[in-house]
Length: 77
Image 1 (cartoon, rainbow, N blue to C red):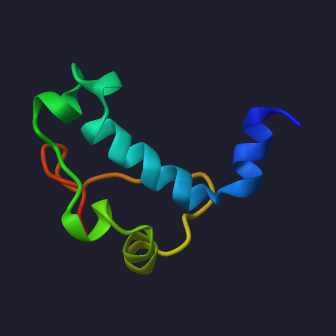
Image 2 (tube, rainbow, N blue to C red; image 1 turned 45 degrees about the vertical axis):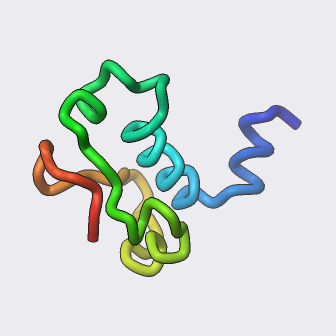
């Protein structure tokens, strides 16, 4: 089984979305991107708890990803 298949099997789509959202805001890999240049952050409620994120957002609809209402705003409920 490939690493990509194993990741999909072990982690639900919502968890991968949550991790990617945090990475865009805080990982050194993204240090020169709009997210970090504009100091976009994840609210504390979501930053430290996947359970809170999934409680607020629910299951991700097929074909959609997470977005912010304000492109210069933070990720928050």
